[in-house]
Length: 400
Image (cartoon, rainbow, N blue to C red):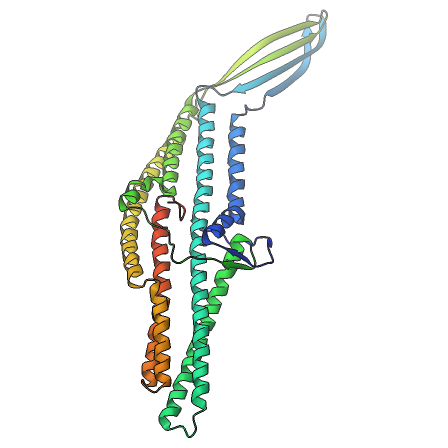
């Protein structure tokens, strides 16, 4: 399913701080793609009402001259006929429209679910970029102070000059990283603005409170609750009804009506009578429509098997990905953030005192930077794998 990114009206010009779940809910309410699907539901509902309406009556008029013996005059015939579907034709058509309406509703719910997951994950990625941007800004400030300190040393030796050059090179690398982070962050902000209609937003993410996963048995036993399977089931019911709809086309239609005839001769004659007409399906018996409907049913049955196989495969992959991401959470706990910051401070102090060389100091910085990034990345990977599982069973994030 493809999510459309359409521009929303500006809803706020002030910074708004929202949680991932709040932003996801806003997107599900405001995104233009949701309005598009809601309008499609209105189309489907109108088509049900249209299917319940009888066909228009047929009014016929005939006129001509009449001669009866020595008398002559005009004759007029008026008839009003109402086609009436019977033998299950009308009910089959209504059922087909009802199934199409159900599919439209499922499309809307699926789109809301996908959109909610997308915004939820985008919000966490945005928070990750902001944290790394803030940390790299601190790195640059620290390195700049070190360069300033190294510049104050009189008669610097070649080794000391090299140390200063290496630190300045590290500053340029940090600036490059910051530019990349800012660019990615702005892209995420723009996407969230398009989806939620908020042009200036701030996000509140509690990294210590990630949504919990369900037991494995829950996912394996609830695969049928995913929207792909629900839609395939509805398509199967529609195809089965299409077969019935095609079959009843071989049954005759009837028309009932009234007729008035006037013979304008002396004396004037008036005739009133009822009529019943039967449309006999001699040529078009819907036989090819039945064949097409049966072929569609076989296609949908095959599609259901493919969807079930895909879901089973996706379940295995996603469960393994969840296990791996849980191990990542254990390897890179949030407590590592403060430990890494403390470790870098100690390395910086040791470098200033000349207890470690510049290469050891820079290696310490790179390791600390990598550890901090992995702490957040491990949480993003966990949410990605959890999202895939929740989508399989038709659940919203944090719906536990």
